[in-house]
Image 1 (cartoon, rainbow, N blue to C red):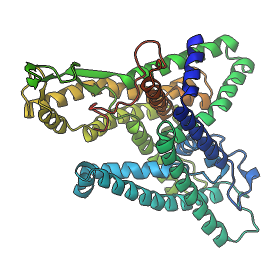
Image 2: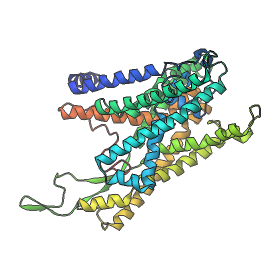
Image 3: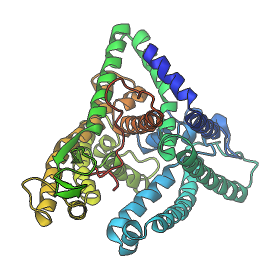
Image 4: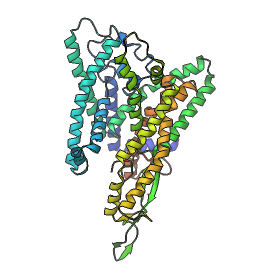
Length: 457
């Protein structure tokens, strides 16, 4: 405890770090405030039960926006259009030569052009999603739109406000990244997820103590299971397969050496979970596609077939079986897109480095590709298991739906990844000023910025 208090004092004593933390907290509070500012012409009373029974894509969007989606707030669309635009631009970088050139050869100017393209694409996506969101509110919740407002004024003004809200959220995220601590966009998503945690936590307490499901002992066991799942998630996110490297002899002073000039033995880390949370996001979007298309194909009073109901229920066996295999497949696909063994082999050749027992060039690329494929298998299986854990927690553990979502899936992976990344930045500030780190031994390992396979080079 004394070590923890001393660490907090050291953090507060560093003026630059203190200002960054306070700046980040201020912008996050502004973002949370915008999640409760209701759009003009919306009757909040008609949206009180909006979250009831939302176990589908809309419920997922609501959790990412911290309840702003169901509140019909200014930040109802949150930062998700920007995330969608970023994914599209990233995928275009794999397929379109122009975007490949901007990513690999243009340097800082190319990065600025890609950022500008992403921003304009965000505006276009938000305009489309804003119209769809208003249509959803108007069709799903009778009486949500005030009868005294003209349709043109309601649609035009709210589309502009929702677009401005997303652009403001994007700006807040970029300012946090530049002048705050941590990755701003990721922090905005995480703060939205955490915002639903207190209500889910107290809902679980009420379920255990008053629902006749085991009382306090079962609640403690549920918390222990959550801690264990979080610990395993941290281990998998940080896990790497180290490929040892050697350097050709270099002239250092008057002699020669087989080691890098720094004198530190180097290695090439291959991430077990190189794809991150993206396979789960892609699989979720694909799983909710049949139900979305069926809503347009079926009549308003027509009952959906049993198979469609099962695919729209995240606790059903068919949903979880298909979902698991989709996550595994997308993990391999996305890893193949972001990991370029040939590029790593060329980089090692330029650095006059080689893998012991492997010839430089094509053989090195094939070796890296083989290792990446092998370590991706346990990573993909883990992602598949972590994606279906909420269903097991809700169905077998008797955990309420809101609290079960924190046992896995995108919520847990995003929270763990963002917390590790933020703690790593805080520790870097401490170590630069010759303070002890956040942990007694070792270092906090978040998202690596070096030549880690699976991370941006």
